[in-house]
Length: 206
Image (tube, rainbow, N blue to C red):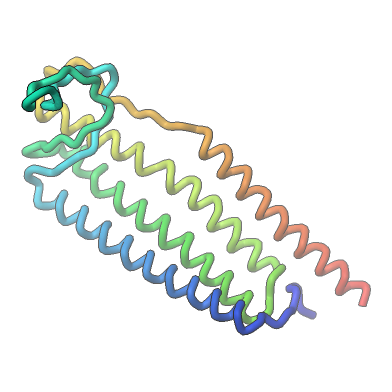
């Protein structure tokens, strides 16, 4: 007895799903290249650019007449530290690694889901598990890199200012996108779970 809905994808569906799978593999490859490039940049250990967030920090920008400096409020900026502290180096290595693992896990789960659909299987415990893994990995994995990025930024600013800069680099997280994302993931997982249960109940009546 099967636990998945069987159907025959049309030719157009198969082409579309195949393109989706190829695009997914390309995304994983690009993510791996980006992560390796960042890790190598950090391991070189000198003049590492770091994106930092600031709170109510004033700076002069050459945007006035003839390039005259004009006071602006600095929210984010790239800073370059000659040498990152050891904890920041560790965080700078973890950040791209988590980003890559998140992308790879989500894409691989979706590719496996697409493969099952190509084989005519939509609802089933395996597909529900794939959707759940992809959804919650995406949510958790997208929240962790900013945390480690903030650690890197704090270390970079401390190194540049010789720990004399009294305005702490802050971490700001907008929770609304994560709440919406969690809601969407919950709906999709519920839909697959209900579809799997209805399929098994229907097969039990046959």
